[in-house]
Image 1 (cartoon, rainbow, N blue to C red):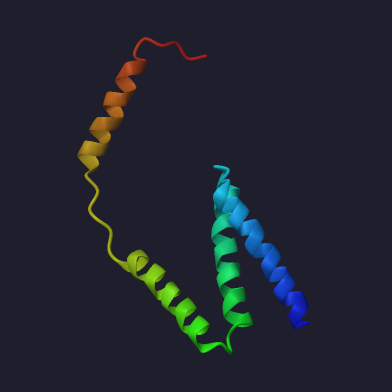
Image 2 (cartoon, rainbow, N blue to C red; image 1 turned 135 degrees about the horizontal axis):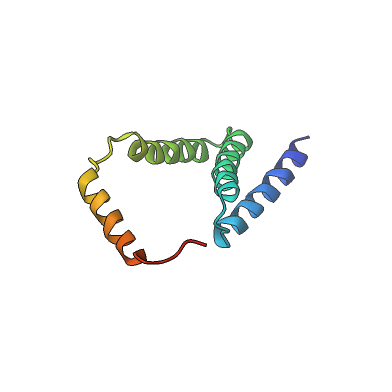
Length: 98
């Protein structure tokens, strides 16, 4: 059973690495990439739970990734964003819609 889990984890990790190295810019591939990272991390944590330094490293990796995601974002300049959008649309003045 453990050998089968390890083999499945290896295949998932290889497929995830291929997707990371050769990304396709679709929403589904981005979701699969994030889900694959979570599955690879969880699988590594479960498979090597008895190895203390691997377990600590994986937990620290999760903490390092979670800290920037939990920090507050910077404020968005709404007026500047709207002005840039309008400036970009001016180049389409006089163009007919098809």
